[in-house]
Image (cartoon, rainbow, N blue to C red; front, side, top):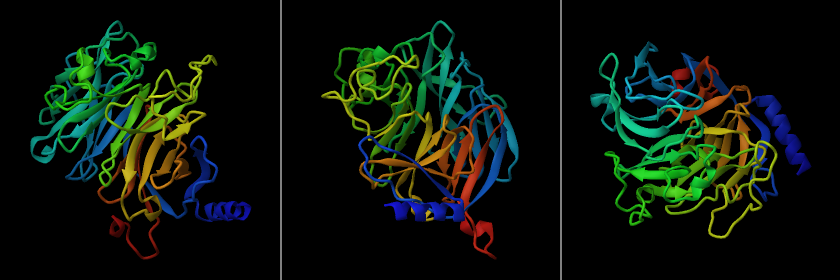
Length: 389
């Protein structure tokens, strides 16, 4: 083991690609395999102010949400356009504002996008799902589904969107920070993953569709704190979620409809005051995480890598981190799961990660001077960069 680690360190120093820094899942007894290689880093978009999500345009370029309510569009030639959206009552405070973005299947013809965002005011604010068509100077956003459970905190919205193959939607909903007990209550929309149609109605085969409360009919899973990573693996069909713990206890979970993921009954983290939240790190009838980060890394975006451009990353979840300013790779072939930090030169708060159609990895940074960076293999001598796309 010692010689293997030494060789791994030498390979890292020589290649300056993946770092050996790793975080193991609870109970892990062995180091994850060291990932090595060379990479090329370039900036493809900049001048972004507190962005939250990015999506690649099928025609080339990018669309990026900013929490202030704008979409920033870069076309295939790198030209920048600011698209201010008109909301009924966008609530921009704390972690609230415009959040996730997904493109309609016919986006190239319709220019329609689907969005998640905070609405309301400081006394009563809500997570909302809506849509807009980006064919006007200031497109109007139409609210489709506003979570009926109000809160008076500007944090823990969740807000990550995922459209499933049957065209229903999943949307993560945070616990509102001060309302953590509601994550276990089926009559509350807080602390859940919700599933609904494009019209905002509960999906007909949801696990609690025959429940008494309205919230229960929408619930896909429950017992979540602040879930911000959500991805469906197109090869296995499995749905993976990650969420913020308190002080410790960040998690990756495999979602199964109807399952309870424990918060706040079960956690491996503590309150920010240092107080103990729960005596339980495991509880019968509640799902243990596939991976636990303690101390916290503050995970943000997530995707899954299936491409030959970076062979060492094949079948890995890629997770961005705000607190640790790092990108992590988590092998889906390893049990127990472990996270390995990659692209050691980043050292910035990261908000989202996207796999481009070219197989390169695109990372959206966070803050008032954010950008999108592209990571591709370092091309061999005399091989042009475009040949690797």
